[in-house]
Length: 354
Image (cartoon, rainbow, N blue to C red; front, top):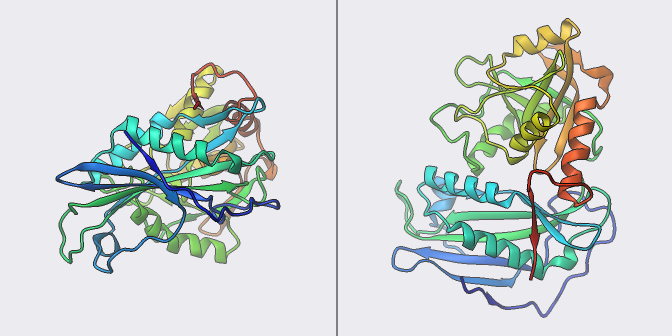
């Protein structure tokens, strides 16, 4: 794929203070268009800036879109690393299929990400726990008020230097169970990475934050009994020394970090169960002293320990509100691979070379 370049003549100053998450953007972005005649075409890297769209664009009215989340890391030897980009691109095209969006050639998607990241390599921060967040996304652009798949699309990639997703870093967070609203059900879009899933979760997140909690634990949309996932993460429980996570049944996101956690634990010789787990079982294990740990996993936070869980007014303190053995091991192990600080026995690291 040929990518044309138009470079900015007004480069921005690089950030020097605390980064936060998702508020600062680099100098350039990638854009590629789709129509039935030419397919995906006109791949280009241009200065970061606003784009012009008709108010009638279908993305605004019918939410036909998708997005992904990845990171680039600077290794101690200066190499630029990605973490399992093939898995993100595979998931991207699974989402595209569900949303009636034309698939992007995986090689082209990877090339777009690699070339943009390499161009913006000076934006990759080097501080502890920092990285360059990569946001690929596709939007429907037909100017049409009617429920029908669009015929035209834009595929874009933007970049943002980031610190920790949560202000407290690896400090355990407090979360509450949402028992009024639901996020997704089987047969819907729960397995896809689409904005509508996150929009549907906002009311639960808002309720949680108003009550002093960092995140929401979602239950299944049918029985309101089985654990699905946390708002921005998959979830794991360590019960009596065994890691347990909800199995993939089409209603939760197949997280790349989730898959990596499972593979890493098995590599280290720890048993892992992927199965349905009810909120009653979680609380029962907690009351019986068998809930050793609870943590979330995701690209943004990597591993996020949970120190307190609230459900129907019952507050369950987990591992004395401290970071547990599994969470520590997984965070150190996975970030060590991501940042090129440890061996990578899985072949997860992808080096950007130009």
